[in-house]
Structures are given as C-alpha cells and as structure tokens.
Amino acid sequence: MPNTPMTRTVALICPNDPDRQHLAECRERWESKYRVFFHGPNAENAPADFDALAYVSSAVEELRAAGVDGVTSASDYPGCLVAAALVQELGLPGPSPQAVFRCSHKYYARLAQRESVPDACPSFWLVDPQTVGDLAGRLPYPVFVKPIKSWFSQHARRVDTPEELIEFATDPGTTAFLSSFVAPFDQLLGRYTDLTIKGGYLIAEELLGGRQVTLEGFVYRSAVTILGITDSIMYPGTISFQRFDFPSSLPLAIQRRMHDVAARVMMHVGFDNSLFNIEMFYDEATDTVKIIEINPRICGQFADLYEKVTGTNTYEILLALAAGEQPDLDGVQRATCNAT
Image (cartoon, rainbow, N blue to C red; front, side):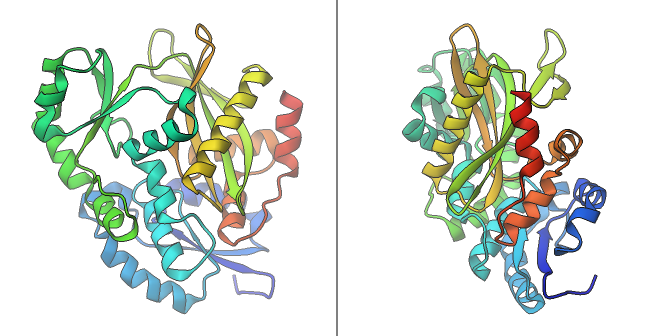
C-alpha cells in the first residue's frame, strides 16, 4: 500500500506466522493508518545462530532509509530485545533496552519486583552452574529452577534436593543451553545495558501455586493502562493448559490488586510506549498475588481472543504504540468493564 499523508510506517521485527495471521485478520481496521512491513528473519527458530549485533547494525541503515515511524516486535526472543535496540538507535517511540532486559532477565526482574512489589515477589536465588555446590545445601527445598533467560519452559523444573540441583545445573543439556541459546541475549545486554549478569545462570525460586492468569496492558507516555486479565484453565491435576477464559472470573477486588502490582513494577523498571503481559498466581488459601514472570511484549496468543470479546485485536494496539500514538480502546474498555 502506498504511503499517504496519514499513513505511518511500522517495521515488525523478526516476524513469525502468528504475526501474519493476526494482522491479516484485522487488516481492514489498521491498513488506512499504518503501512506494515516485515524485517529480519524469524530468529525464534534458531536464536543460537542469530548474530544480533550484526543484524542491528544493518537494520539501522535500512530502516532509516525506509523512513520508518516505528519499530516493534511480537517475538519474545530475540525479537523484542532487538526491537528495543533499534528503537534506541533510531530515536523512535518504544521501550528502552534497559527496561526490556529488566523484564526479560529473570534475575533482574525479580530484583525489580522485590524493590517495587515485595509482597508479590517470591523468594529467589541466583544459581551459577560453575559454583552450584556452594549454594545447593543452603536452599529451602523444594524449589523451581529455570534459566535466567527461559524459553517455553525449556530446562525449567522442580528440584527437591541439593543433589538434584547439582545434577540439573551441570547436565550437558543445561550447560549447552546456557551458552549457545543465550548468545544474542548476551550480545545485546552487553551493548545496550549496564547490567552485568549475563545469560549463563539459573534462578531458583520458591514454589508458587493457585489460580494462574495473564494480565495484559501497555504503557503510553509513562501512563499504565490495563487491558484485561485472562484465566489459564488447567487439566485437572496437571500444569498443562486446557483453555483460556477472557475476561477473568476472579473477583474484581483481586483483579484490582493485580492491576496495582503491574502498574507499580512496570513504572519501576522504566518501561514505556509498548505492550506487556505479566503471568500471576492468586493463591486463595493465603490471599496472595504473586508474579510468575514479566514479558515485555504483546501476548500474541491472546490477540484474537481479545478481538472476539472486545472487537479490538491487540495487534492494532501494538501498531499504534509503535507509531507513537494513543491506542483506541473504546471496545476493550466497554467489554472488560461489563465483565466485572
């Protein structure tokens, strides 16, 4: 589509098949406002082979020549990290690499949570596989252990004894993941942040439980807006997803507590001008809200769910924020308000 005076050009970095599907489904509502083009490989398929710094260097020149108004990504890794680097290099609207890494890096994310929302943060410990024997005997088992840059729950598991932790942390599969898979993560962290702990570590956390949900929202010009909360319904007796229900059936008072937790932590990390989602547990027995993890990106798997309920696909919001514009939330706010 040719540019018009009202059209804003947005580059979608490291695109994947769901990106194409969701954008096609809501095209009639965004195509008069945005020209969207895909840039870069679907690096999610093989992040260990992706040279993030080389890509950023070439992309800066290409995107500057294209006169883009915004850069964004729906890809968890490495897309949203690369997009943040490009935003900084090009001076475009979007979150800073420092803020994105403080969400994506599981250890720094927990530090930020402990500082800003301590009641919602579980106990946690940084695990260095090189010296795991020094820590293993001091943890209050059982614990849940995962890489500080996790991916689809790979190399994440419950650990019940010091011996299990040592075996897991030194397993060749784990150590290979902590060196090759995190290569783009380490490249970008070293170039674009002042954070010093790279991707070759694990994090151990106290076990969490309860009703699992995903809260999605965005920050626009330092103001947090919560879009809604989606319930994760598991198969009985398992941690396998059966379905997702939106809007959430949690009591309104609990949802408001989750809203407050999300706003406080996202402001604390300095996140701005993009979508985010936070997975949380509500434990009815202890009446506590705990953060599972923060994802500094759109929750792409729920884009069509929001569209079916509210009439607004969250990819529309993604494009508006990337272009530096206030998203139109009329349908979303009506639907979520009526549900509560």
